[in-house]
Figure 1 (cartoon, rainbow, N blue to C red):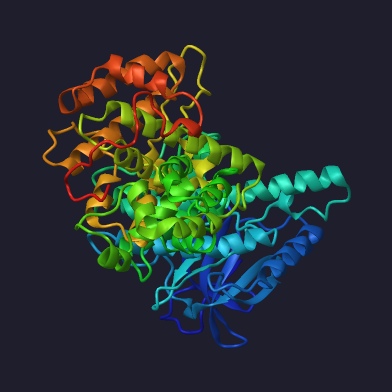
Figure 2: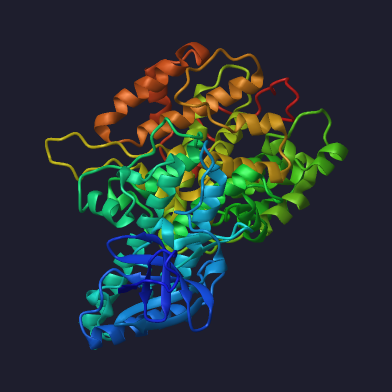
Length: 597
């Protein structure tokens, strides 16, 4: 680039690149640089984005221009439209209209820092544009704050697509299967690097300072694993507080274990959008996507044969009602469908005697009749719905765990509490896990992976614990798994008392003395679910985990670890035993608390 003086002696010297005056350097990194420029030929103000190094020869220059033109042909609301791709003095460039707005590097942030919701929204927009480019086989390769422009209307645009492509990325089209495999691997790696780079930008905006005190995002990436040894987590002393859910998303995106990070732009965008919806309560609630899916295909599919058997029994005489209730209880999908049918405000207002929700299958059958049961059974999707073989197996395991917890809860319940009510409350505390496993199987696998301890350390070193289910849910879905279940229950018409009971007691807080029957039901169900979770741990950790559960609930429920072990051992087996714990007939007296048993 040449530097020439302007004719006006009072004017400052400006850099010139061919027909362009380079008036302001917006930023530069190892891979690229951006300038505010003036086109002397068209008399237009532009933003020029250039590589930091000139292409090595004419062939490399031609390949760079071809790749940049491919990127320029993409049209997306969050990819800045390209005015021109060209070269001056053997410097290739991509030109953009300067009216896109200030870049995030130029933006004068308020003294107290940017609002977390704004940062999440900008990041999600940038991810949407990058995901579109990745789908087209292109990558950015050098996401930087000076290449993210923010318009007055809040729309963020990504500049500089493929500008930082080096010689390795400018190879000719793959000629055989081996080259194609290598090309796909490089493209996938470049896309993952884009996601990490944008996560580092988001971290800097939330923290109010560049990550690792480095303005160049590429330099930060070089210091993080697997290339370096530094770690990047949001500090606690921030200009503005960051909500826990967003903190979990940000920390996962820059996790020191590469396997824990977001693999593609859409997964991180989905987590941020879910959090934004949960924060804003926009329109159809924070969980609109889940509710839409539940509306289309139901909360769960019927277990193999269960719905058909229930439909057949519903055609028989009324003396089979008790047997029908036992069959319904063995299938969570049918149990939930009946509860949904009888707990809508309209049905409860016209048919239920008493002022509490219906929490037993027996009462539900009495309300809607055998024909109603048959309609519910025949309306369910056959197993396994739209799931593939792996998804069906995972959902089956989740159902088995939930039903086992229901049987444990029946064994641990205090005297006088209806076994069926206890069972259904315990099942509904697992509603979030069940519906997420059914409707978001891929995301649930990510959540489970994040919860696994890191076993990649040296053999003699202690493994690092994985995320909690709460943090992993926020990191993948942008909301908590229990909240997903509560959204479905609310849509079914459950009242605030039920919504309270189906939230497990927080494990980080001590269990307080129960003041009402609602609290007792919630407490019993939580203890059973915690016990089953403890029993699912590796054998070396089970005993200590079960002992911790016993200690938590010893005073409230008058249980010891021996009682929990006995209940767990008696609860083995499949769902067929859900209503057949030893010594139970299913006809205990009701609670006397307004629940329609």
